[in-house]
Image (tube, rainbow, N blue to C red):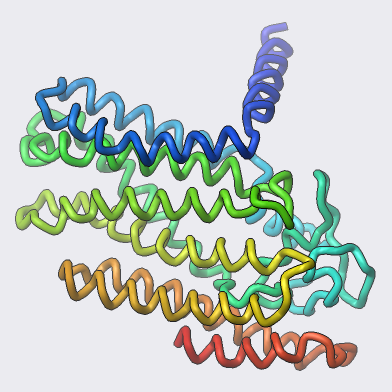
Amino acid sequence: VSGVLNIFQRAMSFRVVTALNSPPLVAAAGLATLVGIPFVDAAATSGASLALLKGANVVSFAANCAAVSVPGRIDERQDQEMRRGALNPTKPAATGQIRGDSTPGEATPLADQEHHTSSYNENYSPARGRTLVSPSGWAFAIWGPIYAGEAIFVAAQLLPGSSGLTEIIPQVTAPFIATNIFQSLWCASFRPSYGTEGWEKYISPAMLAGTAYSLSLTHSVGTGIADATAWYFFPFALHFGWTTAATLVNLSGSVSMGSSTPDSTVIAVGHSSAVVATAFGIGVTLSQSAPVYGLTVAWALAACGDGMKKRIAAVNADRNAGEEGVDLLRAAGVQKKLCW
């Protein structure tokens, strides 16, 4: 009986979370988080209880981890399709599917269980997608050290004798909480239910941009620390660099998934993203003496270049590939050079 009650309670809580996940509500929560950062920071640095600040850090990080574990995100669905063989990553998608409609073609179709066709998932595929900012799968291994490092930070602040870390807790609490909220909101919005044509599809890149901005505030605190405490900021530098690049990946994907978006726009956004990522990588690295940030952005760019290499190889190997999409194929070659 207790087992059945457990399942029922989980199902009900999942339904409640799903019901609350509406685009206007998520967008409003993101805006409120952004506006609230300076106010929370002022309270944290004006003598707030350290126990309260540490507890808030633990709760926000736990909420982030819980949000990441909720199934149904686009990246998770694509991985599931590949695992069960419904998506062949080495074969380019049909032009119609890339653009967001369900026109059948030579590509293996995907089965999306929610509101949209498989094109929503495969739009981000390096070999099959339409976006020019699509990193190879190996790049996402960086999430392991990011979450492990931030978990160590959260745990270390609670340990006795962490005086060096305790001193900077008031300065990092507000941006750290905001980071976790924005990351959770991204998990809520990077889903098929947010559509392929309306404004809702831009909520997820906006939440990633908020994550990167919050991390930039935390990162700036770490750049002024010279002792061993600086090591606690290593995962934040990784996270900052990765979400900078991921924002551009998500934005380019959101633009390219629309069936009404011309190839010229997809190409312009893709090339601009590579240039902007490079500029951020060089600018922040030099201005803040932040090699970890720069190397992380370089990691992401290299993965995007490798993704375009796979796309070119996949299209060239497909004997059924026609003349449609030739501009995107040429642009993939340019993108590879911009990223490498």
